[in-house]
Image (cartoon, rainbow, N blue to C red):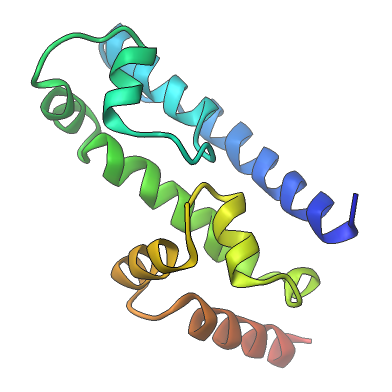
Length: 142
């Protein structure tokens, strides 16, 4: 395994461990759904329907209940975490040569375009612009 892949795996594992340690207090069903999201956070097939089926949750207001307790829809929740991890990976000097697509795929996005669109919506800039900015800031600190 390449050094860069090991670094991505290590950062991702650490991120998921931190998430698991900060589970929300709430009804058991919401806790179960959050644990499922945390477990499958980087799975590209993660979707609300899949989540409902996997967690054996019934009801048409599943997303509404989740949003009531968590403050975001399930999709907003997992996309936010994927973007946060991507930000961390993009800012690492050790990963400067890793393609944006590789980072997008490693955090659970299906394509470069989907990743770029969501990233820009959350951050106000493209992943490549963010990477350049962060790497320049890292250089100034050194």
